[in-house]
Length: 161
Image 1 (tube, helix red, strand yellow):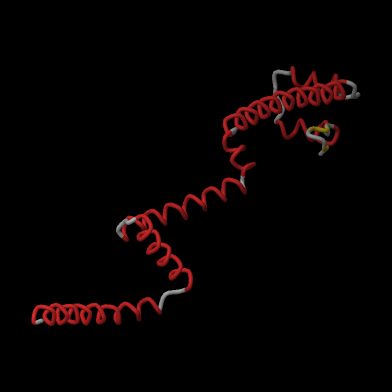
Image 2 (cartoon, rainbow, N blue to C red):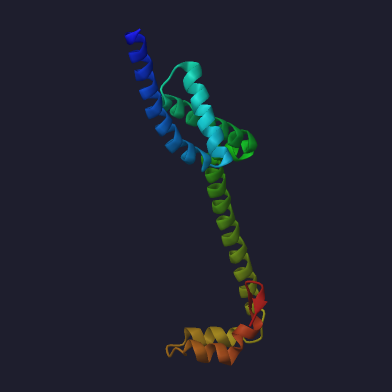
């Protein structure tokens, strides 16, 4: 009988310690948000179901949430991921298009300048311009342009001066 009382006393003593700890943690638990409580309950359920420590259960629940988040993100952004996978192809197509545009621009500019030169050759001052250019005494560019009104008669890049 004495042994039974001693065991009960020990159990009562242990429960008092546990009750004190419970009172401390109860205040902390009550201060948690709804999501934090749900997370803690999921950890506790996982720990009991799989017989893991709370630390292992926390890692498992966190990994499951993260996996779910990543899966949803991937399914909502399939087109984006397809573009990312084809990134190198997009860069190559862009490089090809830029080079093609560069060549076309060069050809267009050459054509515009050739047309402008032909128009210049058609003017009544072309002979005089050639004579001034071939002369040993060179005029300044400014004087040459002002004398022959070059910028007024030439259209380069789609606009005249």
